[in-house]
Amino acid sequence: MPRPILAAEPDVSRLGKKVLSFDNVSLNYDGLSILDNVSFEVERGEFVALIGPSGCGKTTLLNLAAGLATPASGTVRYAGEILRSANTSAGYLTQEDALLPWRDVISNVSLPLEIKGVARAERVERARAILAKVGLKGFERHKPHQLSGGMRKRVSLARTLIYQPETLLLDEPFGALDAQTRVLIQEELLSICKDLGLTVLLVTHDIVEAIGLADRVVLISKRPARLCATIDVAHVANRRLSRIEPQNERYFDQIWDHLRSQTGGG
Amino acid sequence: MAGRAPGREERGSIGRILRSPGAHRILAFALIIGAWQFLSGRYISAYFISSPSDIATKIVTWARDGTIARHVTSTVLITICGFVLASALAIPLALWVSASKLVDAVLGPFIYAAYSMPKIVLGPALVLWLGIGLLPAIALSCITAFFLVFYNVYVGLKQVAPIHTISAKLLGATPLQAAMKFRLPAAGPFVATGLSQGLIYAFHGAMVGEMTASNVGVGYLILFSGSRLDSTAVMAALVLIGLIALAITLLLDHTLGLLGTAKGAQAIA
View (cartoon, helix red, strand yellow):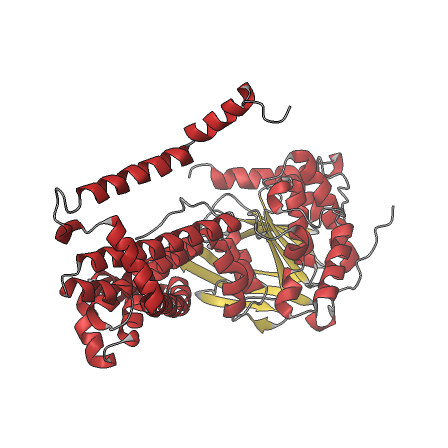
């Protein structure tokens, strides 16, 4: 069934080929070395997944891409320019609920437009449209606490997409959802990303998610994080996000062995 | 049918009214006032306790000659000005201090030291700077209320989940937008508590200011009456002060009730 394309697509022409590049990035925190000479790039339209053991610094990499942190050495570039402040061109979705509990769904979703100064009527119209696209038509007046976890995630996604970012930064966004809801949302996300040609950097623990959604999987070591390997999975289609299909089992094993080697022995 | 003696049901409902808490309150009040009136002049000198009838007469006199109008209006004006000024200063300062670790570390101790100062001792200094009248009383009311508003809002802002400040940054919000759309609403109950405590203490500060540095207001009135050894006037002024305090409390209860805020929210007093 063909997916409807959202009202207006983001303008990706200025991005060039490399959207995000990490160049020998190192970062310390409280005397601990978190990232050690990490270098990799994300190209326009690519979906890259970062996988590594817990606490390895994956979220730090994402924060660098979002402009929320600066490296101790090396550079982080977005669209060719060094990031000096918060990256407002990228949408950021975390596991935590970023919805404002005192606002209803529609005013949560239209918040980015409100900040930009868009007129009320247009805000509401665009919010309604995007809510319909994520399957939440009719829930505009609900408060977040009245919705299930999956529905709140959809609202968060709608809020992230409404201002048409070129890039998405995802930090284990679906970790808190039950398995079924997770798979459904993953499918929708993938569909939307492909429709809009979004560039995506996803941090995850979930190997099936990584193989199923990403074009490329980047393996990170335990802290201090280094790049260990990159696996190209674009050519194999794992269309079912609920499990690993036979042709992809070896990738699963490769990633799993890597994770196990990084977690064992502290 | 008309003119029947009360049946069982009507007697029951009259009984219910008589047994209600409201009826008991009226009865208790009447007993206390009655005892007071009886004791005054007979067993306890009127100089010490005055009497309800004298106090009531005094209040009516004051109502007629404009005393109440003049002093109550002044007190209300001082309280409101002190409160509004305090909030206008405290909320932006709390936003600033809670947002920056550096500012917090530098200014924090000074604010805390100022908070620890007994406010009443500022009276003479304020008279020096602002003369005698409304201004020093407003200043004292403002200073007293300031810390209540500041600390409650500050604590509330510090407990806002970091995800909200991060979201504000990533969505390109200006500091003002971040404060109005994310941070202050997230600190809602604390802001409400801060403002209500602020109003209450603005009133207390107004009383201190009126008694040390003013020539109008119910605080001044009570001081003036006391200095003339007029116990009836002192009691009457106390009644007025009590009524204003009660009005403030009821107003706050009603407003907070409308906002649906928990009255038991963490308070700093």
